[in-house]
Amino acid sequence: DAKTTQPTSMDCAEGRAANLPCNHSTISGNEYVYWYRQIHSQGPQYIIHGLKNNETNEMASLIITEDRKSSTLILPHATLRDTAVYYCIVRVVGSGNTGKLIFGQGTTLQVKP
Amino acid sequence: EAQVTQNPRYLITVTGKKLTVTCSQNMNHEYMSWYRQDPGLGLRQIYYSMNVEVTDKGDVPEGYKVSRKEKRNFPLILESPSPNQTSLYFCASNLLNSNTEAFFGQGTRLTVV
Image (cartoon, rainbow over all chains, first blue to last red; front, side, top):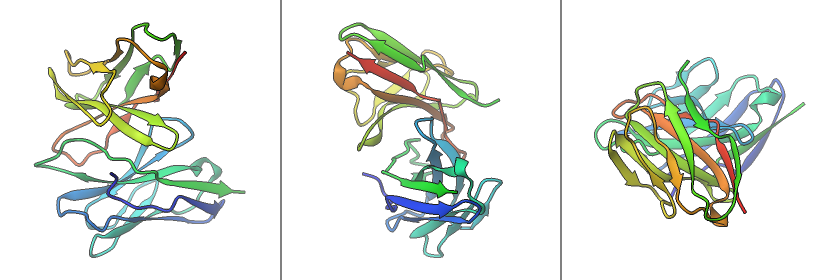
């Protein structure tokens, strides 16, 4: 079973920030939070990941709460091409890492004109 | 360019006719895996490999075989395909013991009639 909980769907207006929440209340100390997205039926695409500090890259920002039990992916200026299913995944890194990604149902983000 | 390449992208076949879906990565990743994606069931891992000549079952291995004779290649073999193996398949690769991301292929849409 997935170790994360996400809303099933969200809408966002084009040009506005999209904030996608994720709950991972049972996260362990050696688990990172990863975000991927899947546009239509293409292969999942990596967006960003973090351990406990907030992270930013050219695609998005990741805000992780201090207790690490939840996080928010922020797409600062959503475009129509950001319409996709967004997956929040926790994964062990280092000793005990099996490499496996456990996908939940994700959040379907619909960006509207 | 770092990539995972799957072939073919689309395949329609008949029940019982052996087929192979190829997967190749150019990033020297130790870990490779196969997922299938079905409506309402999400992405589920079929088989994985942590290195050359090391393979193991994922969550839904029945009816599939894999091999890992070279580090870059990880073919998925359906010895006797059945209609319930009609699905969208993804190959993925990543480094073990690293927090870097996993890369996914573009997918193979298989229909078994």
